[in-house]
Image (cartoon, rainbow, N blue to C red; front, side, top):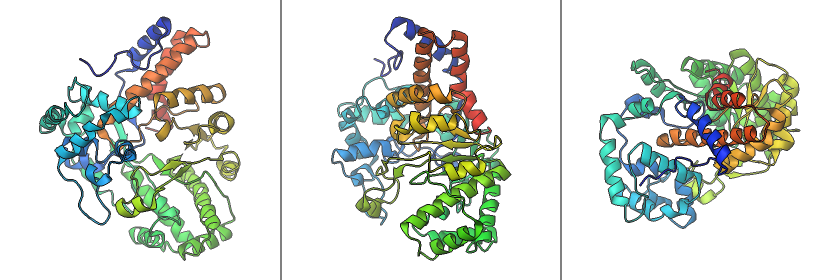
Amino acid sequence: MALLDPDRLFPPDPRCRDLARALHAGVRDLPIVSPHGHCDPRWFAENAAFPDPARLFVTPDHYVFRLLHSQGVPLERLGVPRADGGPTESDGRAIWRLFAEHYHLFRATPSRLWLDHAFETVFGLTTRLSAATADAAYDRIADCLARPEYRPRALFDRFGIEVLATTESPLDDLGWHRMIRDSGWGGRVITTYRPDPVTDPDFAGFARNVERLGDLTGEDATTWPGYLAAHRKRRAVFKDHGATATDHGHPTARTEDLPQAEAAALFARALAGAATPAEAEAFRGQMLTEMARMSLDDGLVMQIHPGSLRNHSAPVLAAFGRDKGYDIPTRTDYVRALAPLLSAVGERADLTVILFTLDETAYARELAPLAGVYPALRLGPAWWFHDSPEGMRRYREMVTETAGFANTVGFNDDTRAFCSIPARHDVARRVDCACLATLVATGRLDEDEAHETARDLAYGLAKRAYRL
């Protein structure tokens, strides 16, 4: 018994389904371009075996453990490490059994699609995970993980990954990336410049982080000119390690374009810990415009990921640290918020700014009209909470009529879960092929155009947008 329906996510109408099948056959085996994600470069530097099934599928994946936790499963029982180093479950089989007992929670979720895809196509499982099948599945996956062909580099090649981008802080020494580069392995794993720890006054240890930025670059980063120069130097180092993009995870899309004297005074207040919430927000907005100008100089593509109220639970943040599934979408204004940045650089066709959103109401009203006119703007794919078949369909329906396909950037998987990468790309390709088939069947797209567009959505747009 297979876990995966070969026609999953295709339209039920026979003609559309046949068209979707044909389109998917043309893109199914294209290389994977993964231009934005959070895999650990250490995996590919050391190429050590993954420790056990639980630490591959459960403990590091907040998509998985947040849903389990929503039904009362303590994070400690899932092996999620505590910030204070306190005890958590360390028995991989015990974690896996708990996960399997609750596998029914994932019915009809994108996580279920990704997990079943990995279980069947990577590890050869053919029986649905449950309490009754937990041990057999664990043993099968553990046996595979002990083999050389399941090491990270071998899986990278098996998955057909052409390029994979990780995301690092400006304070990271990029040692794992140097180790990958010096190893002689042919896999392309590149970094991405994520400056939030030194551009967000609300980030823990902001002033100390800025001092460290200065130490790394030999600049006096406590002065406004030295601070900007330090960013330029670190960006250059990241480019030397393969980076083609920056990434900015701000709470809102607000931008500013202040006179430099005002920006310097705002920076001084932020560094002194004296900035009000409004001033902290203004400083983050100013830094988006400064980063856009730097991108004009060094060619790095700029990604803006606003609209998440991060680490919503203060107790969970204190106990387990950041990124533990408590990031919650909020409303986001793009039209007014981006006006300063777009007035400064939005007409530059040699700049690429990729916008993401967690506020779907902004697709047709704000994002598509903005990307449909400003040469610098492109729209990122349905992201995070909307990285689902339904979310992808809504995205295509609301965006294409105004921005077309060319002002979007294909798909990125944005994941820490390595084995879900081919699964996520498979979902995106199937959904896009289903959407294109519907356009052909309703007379809005010729079939040859649909085949060309399917290839662009699966491969070409991401390569071009991220300059890969």
